[in-house]
Image 1: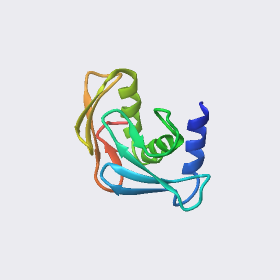
Image 2: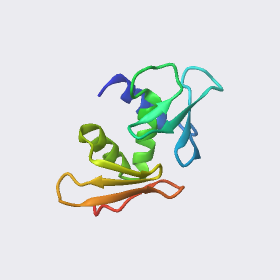
Image 3: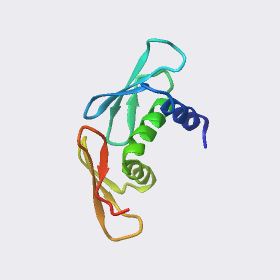
Length: 121
């Protein structure tokens, strides 16, 4: 596991570090500067974070993926998307994810209180 992902997981273990602003925007608290929050906006490929880290996935993005994944199985879709374009974005809060093991697709949606997946498992 890479360093950024480890740091992101640590962020999720603290209370009140992540806040949903709207359907595709979240704020994640800085771990080094008190009172600083970074804004993450969902893009078609990943998260756009305004922190100084120029990596494609900063620790704040990993934290947010972990946070959202804890509520649903939507993180699977993002992983598949990175590995081969198996996700179709219908809207910022609605995705169609192709199964890796079956010839089926599942809906992944944000209903305002977390991501939900129509997959059977």
